[in-house]
Amino acid sequence: MLFTIILQIIVSALLIGAVLLQSQSGGLSTAFGGGGEFYRSRRSLEKFLYAATIVLAAVFGLLSVILLIPR
Image (tube, rainbow, N blue to C red; front, side, top):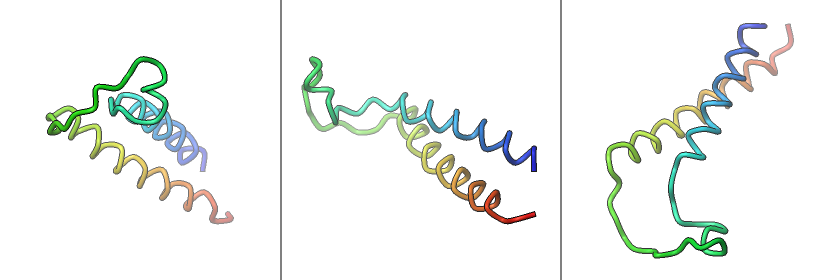
């Protein structure tokens, strides 16, 4: 039980980091000097961050469901 909680904390920190590292020009970025919207293909690091975000979100959800099971 304690291991699962610690693992969920680690996964959540990694998920937050992966989301923050993604550099997409959306949201309020144009209000703070962003912009310059143009089409571009994803590079290898961006592809990795995108895939890592999906995997980490799935693991986080699975751990959340596991922690809901009463012991």
